[in-house]
Length: 227
Image (tube, rainbow, N blue to C red; front, side, top):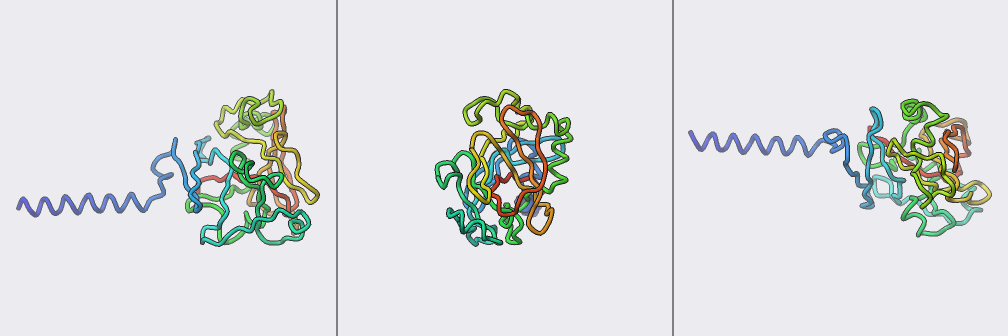
C-alpha cells in the first residue's frame, strides 16, 4: 500500500514538472522574467498594462529555424534588398552591444520568425495599446524613453515611468545612417503598402511618439511583445 502511494506521488510530481515545462515561462511569471533568443542573448522584460514587453532592443542574428539573417553593411546592396537583413549602426559591432541591431522590415516579416517562441514583433494595433495605456501619443514618448544622458543627447522630457527604457539606436535610411543618440525608431509588423510598413519613433527632448510608415528597406530597432 505504502509503495503504491509512493509511486503515485512520484508520478504526480513528474506530471507537474512536465506540465510546467511545456508552458512558456512568461505565462507563469508576469514580471521580472528574462527571455532568451536562439543566439543565447538574454533580455529583461517589463509588464505595461496588460502587455509584457522586452525591455531591450533585439540583437538576434538568426531566425528561429536556425537560418542566418544576412548582415549587410554596404548601403548600395542594402537598398536593393527585398529579403531580410540586419546591420549595426555605422557598421560598428560595438553599437549592437548596447542598442541592438537594426533590421529591415523584410526580416521582421519573414515566416521563419525573428522572435523566440511565445513572442512576436508587435502589430501597429499593439503599439497603440501601449501608447494609449501611457496616456496617448503626446506624452507616451517621454514615458518610455530611458532617462538621463548616458545614451540620449539632451533628453529633458524622459521619465521612463513605464520601464520600457527605449534607447536611441538611430536608423538606416536608403541614403545613410541617421544620428544615433537622437532618434529611436521601432518596426511594427503591420504593412502599409507594397514598399512601406508602420513604425513608431522617438526624438530627444520630446515627450511625444511619432507614428507612420517608413520604407521597408529602412533599418530600425525591434522590440518584442509576448503572445
